[in-house]
Image (cartoon, rainbow over all chains, first blue to last red; front, side, top):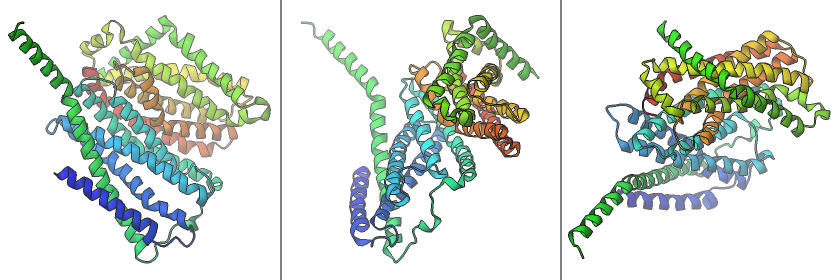
Length: 238
Length: 224
């Protein structure tokens, strides 16, 4: 029931967001219609970080002996999967926006570079999840890998920022280009977009977690069914 | 004290294996050399690009070769269930980590010396600021070896181990690649003052990597 409600709520709010962002909000004075990408780019970026934060918390809860339970591992994996998708979207949407506004698809700026490294760190984490160890073994390895990746991100960000400030002249960033929030609809739509996408995140993770739980017990259930079938076949000899 | 002695034992074991099997010497080292040659093909030597970007190429070659060293360090323990032996030996897991990382670091330092000579000869680079070069190389190597060892044990015994290690290690060592390259550039450009902050970054990264390795190696070694 909760799942359906979440699904409907996120569907409706995304539809409302589409109307708000494409019709209601006026185009930006400087950037024109390209600025409308902000209403998907900002929430996807926020979700990417939220998702990896959830993965880290779930990993800690799995590692902590008192709270250890299989579903924390599955939640960590589900959230990371959604996070990787949203990180990819963030990069792609940012690139689409950068082309008309900065005049380039990609800029080696600190935030972009860190996000790209973040993307690869968690692609690696997902690959580690699929290596076919037992559930316990996978939980341990993945929880540790998730925490190392999470701790690595600030270090990466720091080093990339340092690197970037060294050749400041190469960047095409124009500080005047920052969007100024005007009127009521612009800030409202932005906040609304974050809420709508957070709902979407909750729906996706919930569905993915449910799927993971079903998948987890599948092998055992199939084995059980095969045994029972075999037993029945033996009880009723032809 | 026992921690250091035990790490030295593990390091000695790994280095002895490499000395006797000659895999590092006959495969990983030439691989690094081939990568250097490959870069020369990619960036036409006549355009003078090679000597300018030599620090980056050098560290890229080291990184790629380091992946082989890490994979190799854990592959040697797959045979005859040697890892079980290591586990049962009663050596502290932290010491196992330090020993294996130190062995990889020693191999990498030898590799770096050889590749450094290769860069000087092949890319027409004049070595300057040797102290900065040496400190940056030491700090970067410690960080590389420690991170590699953590991810090595993380993926040891898994099906797709060989392909997994590069994917896990390379993004994680972004700070090493950046820091070591910038420090080398500063040294070769004759402005060592610009390079020392990067060495500090490398030292911090290495310290974090070593601390993380000592902390997580125990549980990871247990039944991997």
